[in-house]
Amino acid sequence: MANTASARKRIRQNERRNARNTARRSRTRTFVRKVEEAIASGDKAAAAAALQAAQPELQRSVIKGTAHKNTVSRKISRLSARIKAIAAS
Image (tube, rainbow, N blue to C red; front, side):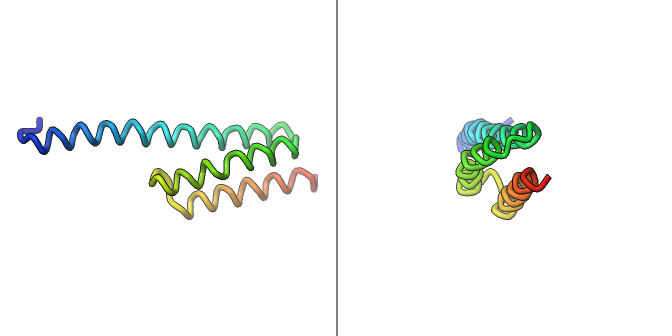
């Protein structure tokens, strides 16, 4: 257990940050899941619209520090490629 006042404060701060980051990560995953579901349904228009909605949320997770820039870029790129492949098949 924390012995000093500063250590107790740090614990409180970490709990708040953890709750905030968990919510942000969950929100981002929800947007990605919606894109995945639209791709699975085969509806290119819905998938493209879902990706348009997900992109700002993914970028926000980079700015807020809950995801790495390259990870988000990779996810967007792969989702875009899968949406593009819907029309080809």
